[in-house]
Length: 305
Image (cartoon, rainbow, N blue to C red):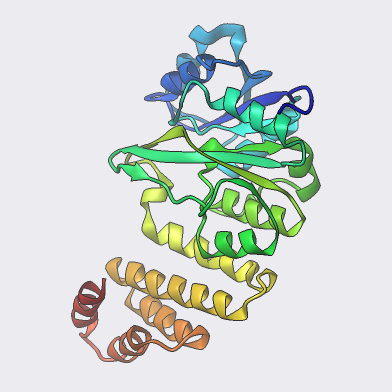
């Protein structure tokens, strides 16, 4: 049952060298069954023909240019410029389903306490498949969802709409992260008492291509480890924090070893043992202390994968 009038939603699209796909992304936003309050494109210092791709859309877009500062800074710029009650995050290479905003406006109207609404996302392109989701739909908040989210980021960021006042209150997205600024923001928001809503319907298709940071495992796992470290004390279960940090470090060690960063890999294996003893942590620490042993440790990693 509807409990009030629907809030307004602005769309923010950060764009950096997105000439190949930004037009398709904007067409999907313009093709929504319910139109947004506004569409803001933040050109984050593009050096290709991104601006040319935007020209045919005319005054249907509000374009803000800035020097290249990364996606977190571009989103912060867009959030600050937005006028809507909520802001929908929309990367410049993803495709929304036509009903996305309509469904989310229904959710936000029926559940006025919700600060972040999101749904199911699916990868397509160089990698395909459904993204991780929470175990159940509906309103999510408190320590239980914090524990779930701490284990793994189960929020597909391109499906999310965020209360603009929450973004302001938390100081926006951290701009010192190469990736994962959304994950850190979700954890901070939960700690601040924000309410989330998961809609199990497919809301966005996430395009995977060679330019995605999410396809650079070393960057991803270094970021995950940093974020989990920052928020370790926020979870009620110290064992969960230690298991998660140890797992991050073991994965990070494998990534570093794959990049021939042998010394850094050994350091990650050794650090994992401080959080949780494991056979692979011991083997990696000891094995990589022996000159010429990196190939053998790589084989062990493959066997245990």
